[in-house]
Length: 190
Image (cartoon, rainbow, N blue to C red; front, side, top):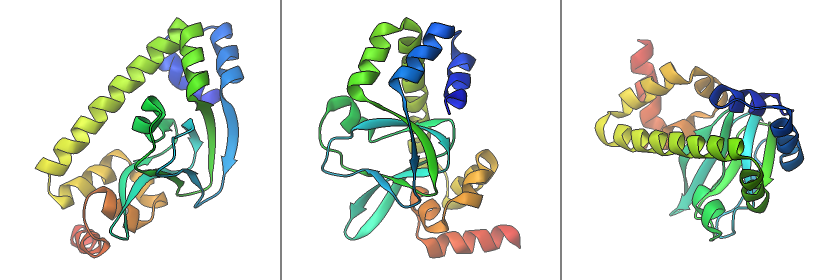
């Protein structure tokens, strides 16, 4: 259950057996059901999740509609980051789009892990940096790319998302209505 996380860490920094033991002691394996809400708006996010298998999303409610702001897949971390880091109530929700196997860690344990292992602290900093870069690029894409180009980018960069995530979530994620995404998909196929 820890293999994917340890492989990801090892891609970024050299780890040894003591680092492996720390990860196994601090991260808890959990199986989650499709549709399960792991973190809820207006409550402080309790866990940071590492996705071993399955797809998850971050969404918030706006005027009766769910707006998907992030979709994540295996070997990725997900939570309501602002809430998890600051300890303030979340503005969004974390939902399993499919059945998921995850490793989860509380903020207290995450901080303890980073304190006990400089390697883990370095890894966490690098992951935060990558997350910031990803979010900046996503903002730029929303501003600069057409909806069709945003969809084509997902198709190219993450075809598994297209195969496993309902189209209404993908449409919301790229900032359009499902009907518009259907038109874009028909144009691409023709």
